[in-house]
Image 1 (cartoon, one colour):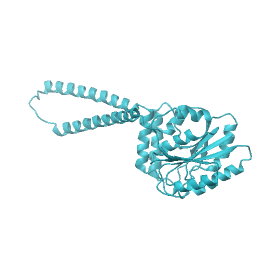
Image 2 (cartoon, helix red, strand yellow; image 1 turned 45 degrees about the horizontal axis):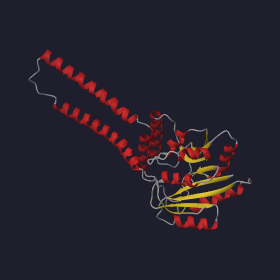
Image 3 (cartoon, helix red, strand yellow; image 1 turned 30 degrees about the vertical axis):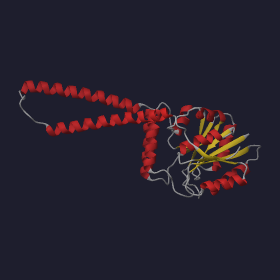
Image 4 (cartoon, one colour; image 1 turned 180 degrees about the vertical axis):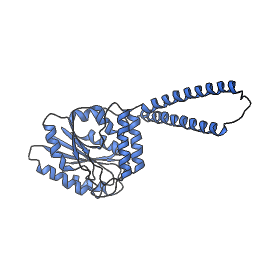
Length: 312
């Protein structure tokens, strides 16, 4: 049996040696006849990440790599790794040690039991994260789970071990704007969650700023639900009805009180127009988000482009 471990890397020069040593420990402690391959996907790193990966591959036949021609993002790196992986079990994990390699033996046992198709890691705490980021993350999971038909677990990470048939199902979804947490949930299969405490990066700095996470959240919502469009429709009906009622009220009042010649209400009218105008622009923005993704998918550009790849 072959186990493939996919590690997306972007400027992980400081953490790679530590991660590789931990992965080697997992491989050494496995007393079965299983073989391991470590697939490093260099996502356009600007430091010495590529050189380190090449050095590892030169000294370890179990190390494979894919180098992107530029930075295509973690989603593309995960997809490329899954395409290259040949294992019966395939795992995805970060290079910064926030996904503890020590969990891998337990995850393998769970898959070996035959009761599950996926064993995924889930953080039960967000200790060490900025409080505002943690707050927005929890709100995001609540919001998207109310909108979507599939449930995305709060604290779910990309760190998971999957059977071959699960990975084949994920690879069959070739969309360009990828939101893997949603894709993992959408394909289904029997999943076991392994809970663990939040682990801080072993070295280096996070590549996910607040605004990058915010854009990623927007991608997730747009990719898996049309609820925002439906909400815009409901709001349109509501304000159209409210406007009709207000017009009827004003007309009846004008007849009763004989106020045809009065000119008043400019401040309230201005506020009303600005409010409605803002809602219209918001609705157009929502429509634009969906149309933009249709445009991207219609161009059918590749998810990633490789500049170099290890030989199998």
